[in-house]
Image (tube, rainbow, N blue to C red):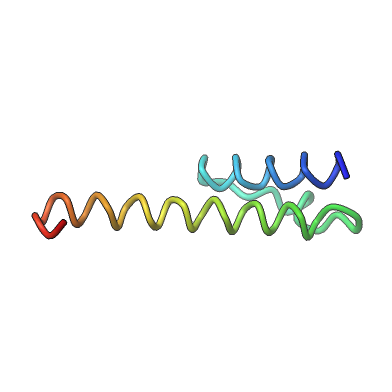
Length: 60
């Protein structure tokens, strides 16, 4: 379980940094956790940018 959480955290951190580790994403045991973390991080960035756009456009 700890390996899965570590892989998820690494995926999320990589997404926020804007770089994906293909080797970790393909790992047979923790690759899925890494990919989910990466996806969650990318979604967080998308939401943050959407909020910034709304604020800058004055549509909040």
